[in-house]
Structures are given as structure tokens and as C-alpha cells.
Image (tube, rainbow, N blue to C red; front, top):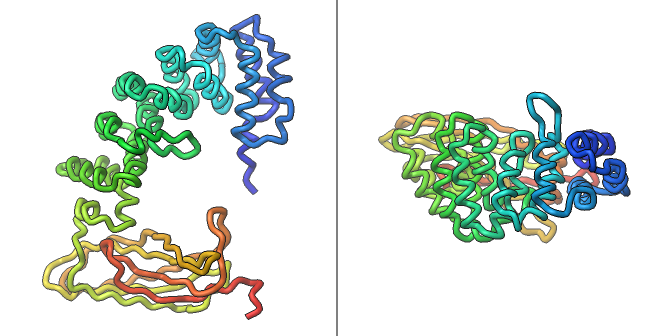
Length: 370
């Protein structure tokens, strides 16, 4: 069983953190810091532990943020000495976000210095929320920074719906201000940065699908293989939902003269096993067709209604008269993000965004008497 995330912040790490700060600030009371940062630690989850350590920093670093920031900055690693790094910097993010907002440029500069050693995407979001225009004016300048971690922070930290982080409602409503940053980073030499750009665009697509589809359309002509991958990854939510422009961006027009057969091999599935099925598509038309084939499992919910979840399957090119067969097994086993209910479920085949075939199957839970 994997180690709980909360254990990333533990007593030994806190003691090491205290030593590294004290090594750069003789007046730092590391004993008091450790006592405050570990009091009741075991009962807390990850972000609660981080907040406890942050509060210990409140109590032991100088009250004046410029003085505290100077200590934290010199406590970061250098070529000549170790320093605060890794998960030690999660509570430092929270400290800067809480104390640095009245020292805008200094706070963002410290987060920029921090990010090569641990992400600062959580720390910059309160700055964006406080003053979006001022923050983005500074952050946009990071897009050509020589450090890949700083460049990634420019895209990752401005994601409207960054997981685990505070949402940025202004950017959810109007993401236009971050598009120049994403455009500047679209052809970054590091995949690490390009993937962040794709994830940010995918975030935007959840609220503004037409905007992202149009953005992709305007940047796909003559795209390198790296940019094309980025644009397709950015469009993944739109492609799953069958957005017409998004599909057209990658050559998937509405399928015409297409025959699609779905065959289920086990119409009754015991939970913990899998649904075995076969898809056969035939191009009955007179021109080749590019096909994106997905499938959706319509899961039964507690109220008896069905809720679909789309899964990627295969992209193919079919010549006129050509057929193609795909065999799949879809596992139905315990996962943390879904509760399964017994009864009638449905599988649907989706080709270029349109449902082309479907069948029902019955899910049997091991405790079911039948």
C-alpha cells in the first residue's frame, strides 16, 4: 500500500528544515520552531501539516516580511551548501502567500527563486488573485527565463483550475490574459514546460471550449511534431466530448457512410472482472476517412440514472471499403474516484464525436444474491 501523502511532512524533515534556516540566521530559534511545527502533527493531513509548519514560521521568523524573506532566500540551496528544498518548501509557499502580499515584487521574486527547488505554483496564486494585472505583468517576463522551472511556473501557476490549489475565478471567467504567456511557451525546448502549457489550455477548454478550439486552429498549420502533440493534449477534453472544431483541427470530420458494429462477449460482468467487447468499423463510402474511435461506459449511479465516462480507444485511417476490428477489455474494479452500483449499465461507441452503436450489460456485485 502506498505511503500516505501526509507523511511527506514529518518530524525529521522539520528538524532538518530548522537546521538549514538556523545555519543562515543565528537568531532563529530552531528549538521553538520544531516544538511548534511538530505539536499534534501526527493527527493532521498533508495540507494541515503544511499549515502547522507555516504557523511555526510565523512565530519564529521576523515579523517584517523583507527581513523574513532575506532569511528564506539565503536558506535556499546553492552550489556551496544545502538548503531548504523539496517538501520543506510547501509551507514556505504558504508563508510567502500569507505575508508577502503587501510586498508584491519581493514576494514574487522570492517565489521565483524558490521554484527551481520545489514548485511555487501554490504560492503565486494569492498574488494573482489580489492583483491579476500586476502579477501577470511580472509573470509574463518569466516566459524567457533561462531556468525551465521558472518558465514552467509561468504556465502552471496561472492555470485557472490548478488541482489542489486555490481557483482563480477571474481567469476561469476570462482566460484571455494568460493566452500570451501560453503562446510564448508553446514551443519551449523542454517537454516539462510544454506539458504544463497543454494542461493549462485543457483547463481553459472546460469553460471556454470554442476559444481553445480556435486557439488550436490558429497554431496548428505547419506545427512541429512537438507543438502538434501539445495542441492535441490541450484538446483532449474537447476531443472526448466530440467538439466539432476540435475534431476538425486534427482531420476528424463527421464520419459518413460508416458502418459500426459492437459485440459484447459477456453481457453480465462480475465486479472485479472486465467487460470484453469487439468493435468493427467499415468505410462504406468512396473516400478515405480518418476516424477517432472512443467508447463511453454509462455507469449506473445510486439514483438509478446513468452517468457516462469516455475512454480513448484508437485513431485509424480507413480506405474505401476497408474494415477494421478492435478488441478491448474494460476493467470494472475498485477505484478511489468511483462507487459502483449493480444493475444495467451501457457501453456506447463514439466515432469522430458521434455515438454510432451501443449495448447494455449488467454489473453484478459479489454480494448480490442473484
